[in-house]
Length: 135
Image 1 (cartoon, helix red, strand yellow):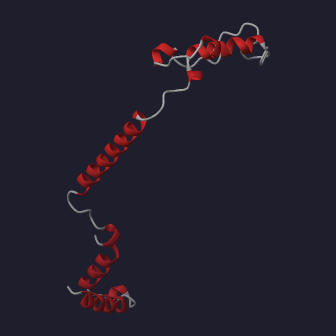
Image 2 (image 1 turned 90 degrees about the vertical axis):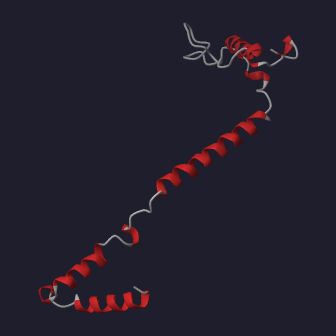
Image 3 (image 1 turned 60 degrees about the vertical axis):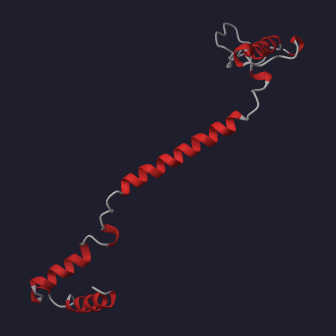
């Protein structure tokens, strides 16, 4: 039905719905219900294959993100030499000597934590330390 005819029919039906609904015919009641609650506009069903497209484009987005991440990550510099296990162990020793955080931290009596050690050794990371004096 052309849009102009639809609009005209809707206007007639809107005027007809202003009267007592007991005076309306069954066909007019059905048409009013369909206009108010029918499967059109926001209540329309999605077209077939829409979810397939959603999954496809989502997969493309994830793949592009992964390629970008790996590409950028491959050109990144190695971690700094301060992020090696040896450097962090030396930091622990320095902090113990200086009595840093003596109440509940690394310099406290009976401390059993790792301190500031959180990384792998330099050999495991492939980092060469320039000299032993740096540690």
